[in-house]
Amino acid sequence: MERVEGIEPSYAAWKAAVLPLNYTRHQRRESYRPNLPCQSAVANLRAVNSLLLSGGRVLDPANHLDTLADVLILNGKIAAVGNDAAAQAPSDIEKLDANGLVVCPGLIDLHVHLREPGQTLKENISTGTAAAARGGFTSLVCMPNTSPSIDNAGTVALIHERAAREGAVNLFVAGAITKGIAGEELAPIGGLKRAGVVAITDDGHCVQNNELMRRACEYAKMFDLPVMDHCQDYSLVTSGVMHEGRWSTSLGLQGWPSAGEEMIVARNILLAELTGASVHCQHLSAAGSVALIREAKKRGVPVSGEACPHHFTLTDAAIAGSEKFWAEDGKQVFSLQSSVGELPVWPAYDTNFKMNPPLRSARDREAILEGLVDGTIEILCSDHAPHCGFEKEVEFDYAPFGITGLEVELALSLMQLYHTKRLGLADVITKFTVAPARLLKLAKGTLSVGADADVTVFDPDRDWSFERETTASKSFNNPFYGWPLKGKAVATIVKGRKVWVEQEAVACV
Ligand SMILES: [Zn+2]
Image (cartoon, rainbow, N blue to C red):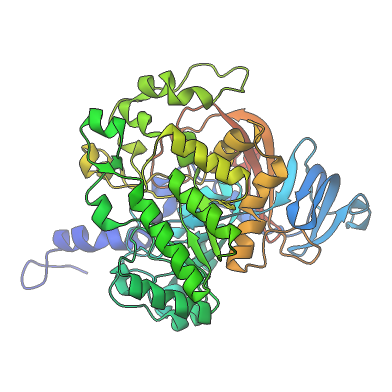
């Protein structure tokens, strides 16, 4: 259709205003993500829903299973696990040799931002779930701070429909606590539950009004939904951009104090106790938050917490540049690894180290690790938060908060928890499978016979490095490019379909 200048906006103006919002409708994915598996291969992979995984170390914490065994998948369900599984398999079944690899329930990440609808220049359901598959994740929970926000049943239905059509992995939806995530008026929580949300949260924002949060907890309890909270007291944090401490002072950046998180964690504990609602504190970063949750759990308060790899790998020293980081706080990152080679280098004020909550001190990092080890923090997740290059390539003060994480979170978690001998492999897997499934009441996170065949196959000892050219995400805002990583997913299976296998994906590039 020809458009002429006149009362209507010009075609150029329309394109500038509307096109970014409808990016997926106008651009085929391949044209700007050439590194994704080629379509024919995806089609071939998706036709398969029966598979025999032979000879792997089967780790299923939900069934207290850690043994060398075969796993038989028939018609998208787990059909048998054990030494006799192969004997039950049809003779022409496709086989995947899992010798030397770990076979575990498909990993779940309950905290990701897929940016759809409305911010699909950063990411969309197709690219975000493709990144998840590469990282070994078979189920995601997407956050509602999209544009418009997920505060009504219609938007939930839209996401479910798009995920069914374009998603590489299972996608569950978190609804908003308040309308428009504005923190002023409750969203229709009952309607959201009926539409299928698995939790409510205003993530990215935090309900400041305690009375409103109390009502949200009461409704959530009534509808049997956990309340997940991004813990940030605005009056304490104001316009802080990094952890308030020694480094914010020397770098001249405004601080975001630990108390800004701890204040809301304490508030949430009190409200969980008052209402009986299950309150989950997201992306914990501060030592005080861990101590508060540890003490509350002892009293039986229904509160829980999650941690992201960047908070237990990096510290605020990273914002002063790689030299400062490796000289002090960075020393422990690779301390138990025999050969690391050249350490990664980055400049001071690198905005890929800006996230919310911010990277904190070495003491806070240690407290998060301790909380993960003693079970105070039950869940691991990425807070995958893609942003466009042009948004991040500005002064530190003006850059948006957040980094991508789906493709490196398994490796970083294994490095900081398993390879440092702080936790056993089964404990790390528990935090990615049973624990999130239990919080959200998902029928996932196990290899029990009859369960959906969501399976992750990974090599806990694989040395590799994450490179910009290989990411499946639309965005590149990640601080871990070029890091010597250890531990990698090699096959991701969703309902019996191989949605990603390392070699085949490489062959298609
Ligand atoms: Zn958040």
